[in-house]
Each structure stands twice: as structure tokens, then as C-alpha cells.
Amino acid sequence: MLTNLHVKNLALIDEIEVEFGPGLNILTGETGAGKSIIIGSVNLALGKKMSKEMIREGEKSALVELVFQTRNPKVLENLKEMEIDAAEGQVIITRKMSEGRSISKINGETCTVAQIKSLAADLLDIHGQHEHQSLLYQDRQLEILDAYGRDQGSCKKVVEKSYQVYRQLKKELAEYQMDEEARTREIAFLEFEIQEIEKAALKAGEDEELEQQFRKLSNAKKIAESLYQVHMLAGDEEGSGAGEQVGRALRELGGISEYDSHLKELMKVLKDVEGLLNDFNREVSEYQSGLTFSEEEFFQIEKRLDDINHLKSKFGNSIEEILLYQKRQEEKLEQMRDFEARKAEVNAKLQAAEEDLEKASHTLSKIRKSYGEALEQEIVKELQELNFADVKFKIAFSRMDHYTKNGFDMVEFQIATNPGEPIKSLSKVVSGGELSRIMLAIKTILADKDDTETLIFDEIDTGISGRTAQKVSEKMARIGRNHQVMCITHLPQIAAMADEHFEILKSVEGLETKTTIRRLSEEESILELARILGGARITAAVEENAKEMKELAGIQKTSRL
Image 1 (cartoon, rainbow, N blue to C red):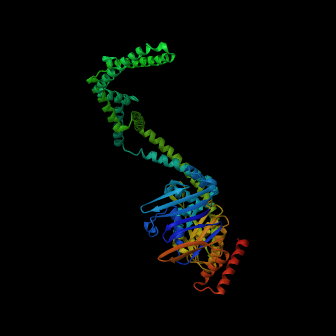
Image 2: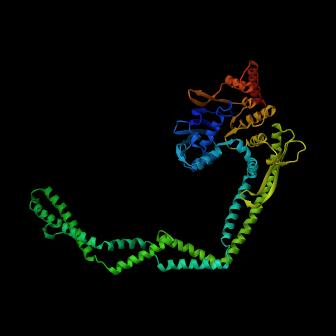
């Protein structure tokens, strides 16, 4: 669940830090106090785009930090794949925003927005006006149906696997869709490339050896001049070379070594030096005698390197890559020469894969229809409790003209909210307020099946009041038994159900306007309910009414829910 929210320098917020609890967390406040900023800051932490105007006036950067405590295996597995440690299930998502850029981190590790969104999908679920509207899309409706019947997920996995095989074969077959003239051109081109590489008779490592020889021959004059100097300095020439000097030192030391055993040891060391120097001079001399420069050899090496580099520019950065390219082209050539037989083979495999996919999709569709009927009944029941008195709800199935990883089913949620009305598509019937209640009904049904630990509802009370508001509050409390729920509301019936009640305030200090948030005590919660009930003037009767509403909500939570 979301345990902590820290926001700094964002819009009207100077700095706030709030700790949320389990169950139903209610946020209330005056219109314009900044309630939307609170939910907005959560969205920003999870990767939503923001404008630089969102940074508080006079500040250079803004910060949002979310702290979660989770036991969701999907979240922990996702973190493991990202190589991020989550000690004792704690997940800290941080986003720092400044003009022109932002940095996101998970548990201190810098990450991408895509990684944040992937993780957030299993941490919390935000339902606002946009999310309610998504209920009108048929792909979202299919997701809801499959979430309800997720116990049949093994069948869906079979469809997904069959679809992957089918799609790959379909892609492979598409590569065979060419006319005879195009195939002839392709064969000729492949043969030309293969012959060009074969003619070069390349050997692995050949280029490195040639480059080494080329460097030696290119610098032969410099090498010869430098070795002459080396021989003069290290040899016996003119009595000034190192060899002659070491020999003289040995003769001097030999004349005195019999007087001290330590001098004999020094003489042995110097003899070793003399031996090493003689070996060095001999090898230098041999190298010099073998150092020749052939114009013809140099030209051949240079031309061979040019040929190899020309092939590299066309087929790969190394001889190994060029030979691998040749192998791939030979395989393509073989396929082209045996074109019709291979095409028939792939086509036969595709037909078999399509039959498997059709069978698996048909089985999945049959299962979907069975649990679709059960979902229809549960949604009708939940909607009736949400004051849809005579509602009819149907999940209509149709078949797409193609396959997807979900099979061939296309579903459409249909509803009739009033007696005598024909049942129609959800998108053609409901208002915004009705849509939010339908989403709430669905969330109530899926509450026991959903692994997401935190649900956030924004604008859930759009277009409702009275008895309907009371029913909505009961549903929220019911979801709160198995999930952490956060809800921004204007309705006292919903606020009264709070397990934790927070007030969002806007205040003016000097020339600055600030939004703050604070947890309310039981007594303060009653006063906030009274404010919502009574408006600007809170009388004793209004306060008593608020107290009674709070008490009744407590009774309902313990008895009916």
C-alpha cells in the first residue's frame, strides 16, 4: 500500500508529507483547496508529463516521492528483473523535476519512465474521469471480462502461444510473396555477393596479420635507422657501446674480487648482465640482417588490404562478420532456388497453426461466454445496490475478422438504465456520473481478484447525491476491506466512512498561497463533515447531524459490510 507521500515546490504546495493508512483514506477540502494537486502529484511521480509552470513560483525544481509497502509477487519479480533491491517489500519512487528535464528513481536507482509505469501498474490503480471513460472502449471491456474469469488463464495462455506461432509463420510466408521476375533478380544478386566473397578467399585473422606487415614495411627506413643507433649504443662499437663498457667493468672487478666474497657475488651479477646484453645485441644484429624492403611485396600487401577493407565496407566490420554474412546469403539463396517447395511447406505450417489457433480461440470464447453470464448477473446486482433500480446489463459477443493474442472475441457492454428502454451500447446510454458508478460496481466485483493493493478514486461522486451517495460509500468501504483505498470526495456520506480522514487546506501567508494536508482526529473529522453538510455556517444541529452520520457509518462498516 501507499504509506507515505512527500511533495515539495509543486504548484501551490510548498512542502507536504503525509502518511496514509490501510482501508479507506478520504481526502476532503474546500473547492479550489488543491485536492486535484494531491492526485496530480501521484500521477507525476508515476511518469505523467508536466509543464514547467507546475514548479512553484520562485523555485528551480520540484520533488514528488511515493513510499509503498508491498507483498505483491508481481511487483517484487519486476524489481528483481530490473536488478533493484526491495528490502522488506519497501518501494520508494522519486521524481525530481526542473525546467526542461526530470530524473526518476526506484529505491535510489535511476530508471526510465517506462520502468516506473510498468511497476506502478501493479502497485496502484487510479480511477478518475479519464479512467471511467476508458470503460467505453471494447478492448478495455474485454480486459475486465478476462480479469473476472482469470481462473481460466491457462486457456488464454494457450491462445497467446498459438497466436505467436501463427503470426511468425504469417510473417515468414509474406517473405515468399514475390513474382518470378523479382525472384530471378534476387537470386542473381545473392549469387553475385557470394561469388565476390568467395573470390577473396578470406582467412580468419588475415587482416590483422597483413596490417602488422604493412606497418612494418611502411616504417622500414625508420626501423633501420633506429636499430643502427641501438646497436651503436648497446654494442661494442668504438669503445663507447654498453657492451664494451660492461666488459671493462668486469675486468676491473675481476682484479679485486679475490679480496672479498661479496665482490665475487657482484661479479656474477655483472656477468649475467653481460650475457643478457650479448644476447640482445646478437638478436638486434640478426633482425638488421633480415630487414629488407620489397616494393612488390609492399604493393601486394597494400592491395590485399584494400580488397579486404572494400568487402568490410559492404558486408561487415571484420572477416568473421563477412564470412557470417556469406553464410546467411547462401541460406537465402538455397531458399530462393527451392522457393515453391519452401513456400508450400510454410503455407502448410501456417494452415495447421491457424487451425490450432482457431480451436484454442473457440475454447476460450466458450469459457468467456460462461463467465460472462455470471459477470452480467453480478454487475446487475451491484448496480441495483447503487440505485440503478430497474437496470439491465448484457455482455454481447461478436467475432473479429482477424486473430489477436486474445483470440477472436470482441465484447461490448450494453445497458438499459430505465424501464422500457431498449438495451444499448454503454457509450450511447450513460452519463458521466452513471459511468463512475458502473466502474465502481466492477471494481467491487473484481476487488477479491485484483492483486493491486492501492486504489485511488477521483471524481467518483460525480453527479450523485442522497441514497445513491450512501450506496457508493458502502461499496468504497467494502473494497477497503481487502485494499487500501484513497478517495477525494465532496459528499459527507462517503467521507463519513473514512478509516483515515485528511483535510486539504489552502491558506494565504503574506503574498504566498499554500496548500497543505493534515490527518484529522475523530472530533475534527466530525467538524469537517459538518462543514460539508452545512456550508459556511455550522450550527449545533448540523454538528449533531455530522456526529450521527459518523456513528451510523461505523455501525454499517462493522455490521453490513
